[in-house]
Length: 198
Image 1 (cartoon, helix red, strand yellow):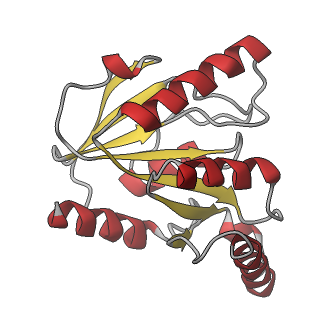
Image 2 (tube, rainbow, N blue to C red; image 1 turned 90 degrees about the vertical axis):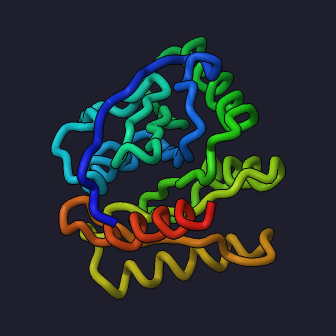
């Protein structure tokens, strides 16, 4: 898939205010500072479609972007260590949960995982929650360029082994780098394949 157009549509904190559209949606979510905004900009070929920041927790709303006029990319707030108040975190959790439970247009969630780190409980718990609620998801390992190939392979293998302790099979996963554009074609082709089958 080639991204010809990528346009910001709306930001909000209420699922009821999301676009009144039947277009398929693909949600991107991950722990704070996992490189989500950089990945979204890399996928769309836009330098500043999603706002990047060295300070975790930059994304604080449900952000919809219209891609090629036929699907929505949804940028969701990071979870975990965002530098926001406890009350704000509760709001995040509430509308993120509502989005996944209520938004029928949501076809697949892409859960971003920092490939440099061992499996984190908060990521495992979130994916477990998605599974328990029958919400389709894939894993995107980010920042692959920060590791030597052998270490990257070892980290991915360790992650797979831990996942398979509680999952029957490993979810679909992609290895990416926002710097080298590794994984760009694979993810976009995956989305295109789903769109063509709907």
